[in-house]
Amino acid sequence: MARKLPAKDVAIIGLGWTGSIMAYELADAGLEVVAIERGPWRNTPTDFPPNFAPDELRYRIRHELFLRPEQTTFTFRNKMNQTALPIRTWGAFMPPNGVGGGGVHWNAETWRFLPSDFELRTHLTQRYGAGFLPEDMTIQDWGVTYDEIEPYYDRFEYLCGTSGQAGNIKGKIIDGGNPFEGPRSRPYPTPAQDQPFSHTLFAKAARDLGYKPFPQPSGNLSRPYQNPLGVRLGPCTFCGFCEWFGCGNYSKASPQTTILPALLRKPTFSARDNSEVTRINLDSTGKRATGVTFVDAEGNEWEQPADLVILSAYTIFNVQLLLLSGIGKPYDPVANTGVIGRNFSHQTISSVDSFFEPGKFIFNPFIASGAIGMCIDEFNGDNFDHGPHGFVGGAYMGQVQTNGRPIETTPVPPGTPRWGAAWKKAVKENYLSALKPGTGVHGSMYSYRDVYMDLDPTYKDRFGRPLARITMDFHDNEIKQNAFLTDKFAEIFQAMGAKQVVKHYRKGPYDVTQYQTTHLCGGAVMGTDRNTSAINRYLQCWDVPNLFVTGASGFPQNAGYNPTGTLAALAFWAANAVRTHYLKNPGQLINA
Image 1 (cartoon, rainbow, N blue to C red):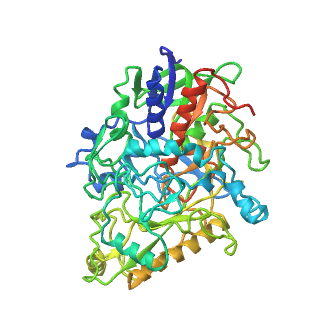
Image 2: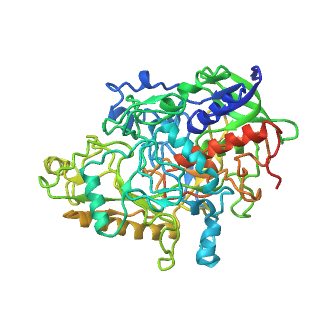
């Protein structure tokens, strides 16, 4: 039987980006806040010292910072008529684990979604007609607009010290930035990072082809910076150990380097690590959360009462915990009813390998950071006319090679033996003159009726709870999208002077063993209609008003960008709604 702890005003499940933001904002409002994190505590100077953290074998190959499949896993299948099987080794995505969540290991690519992304179904229907969209595509508007959350994008960028070149300030297009971005209220807090040779060469070729390249917005800082909370960050040293790694230089924005130092000074905040929340507790009506139950590292079960519960875990765990707790109606893809598990999505990613003449082109790929690169946005979202092409959606594309680490950076042309003297010779000849990995098409994945999450009927976790089951496959729209974009992308490398360009298209079926991104989205989506959304525009649960659900699980579909900037902006947006409206009058913020 669970032992009951003293009640708190707020219980937060997960202490990554959104959990840290919500915790800071609510503790700042004077509330007693406890955050409960499944994984270990992670501290910058002790966990990621510069002389220890850049260990490719430990972090990239052996996945030190991620959840272990033996701790818990998910089952996967492509189609509803298949039997799902447990994932034994992470492949297509990497579930984070520990304080800081995915904000520890991310590349720090800090994008804003396009204004049209937030009103996607309305926008596409008005431009192309409802008949242009696939019949089984379930995309929907978010219930919030770009203009409404722009101030919260700004807050996150200034929290992180994001480095970039603005392309649109209050409607004025700025040369050198992204001309397709939504209007921003002010410039980035720090200038864009200096770009290595391959990135500048890509930008020149893109300009020659008529595109408008711009530096990728980066949470790897170009300058020393002190954020509004008084936390100091240093400039990036271009070590090439960002994605999959923590940063010991305090130069990559993460919860540890931006907000946790200020949060830990709040006297009303506390945290429990190595503690897994097993359910959200409800009262007898099922309409009010009374707190959470969690199990600590010793296997002891505890009940943490709270007046307000914030669910801020990774996408899959948000959805799974809602299902396990009996909150919201589970999605049924056959009847097309229910909301929990609906509109699940990932990303449509592809790459191009380019081989240049050795000796003439020396790119030094090891001089890199996680979010460095020159990009184009002409083919993102609905920035181009999709009518002649027969698909919707798009991608940002860029030369964003982020590392030259020795184990995984072994570029060789097609036809090279996979081992032996000839392979070694080819690696030596091409290491400095080939562009691989990281060069890519970062595409959207829209939502479909038969792509969803539910609870597996067979497999259970160590607590006897059903595992989350993923049913996912690519659809013709995404395959067409990716083929078109990959061809356009390859043209730029041909214009750069590559002697050989190898295209790696994204093809079906969806392969759970092949890494894409960790950007799983949806399953507990936001909206204005409770029949098609789990949470309202303020991320408040329709069925349990004192429960808010943050993170990418709220995205109705995935755009052609990295999600972190948007999920963080929405967390600030939701925190403002709690502080400004909910605390004054607890209850449903929207009647629907």
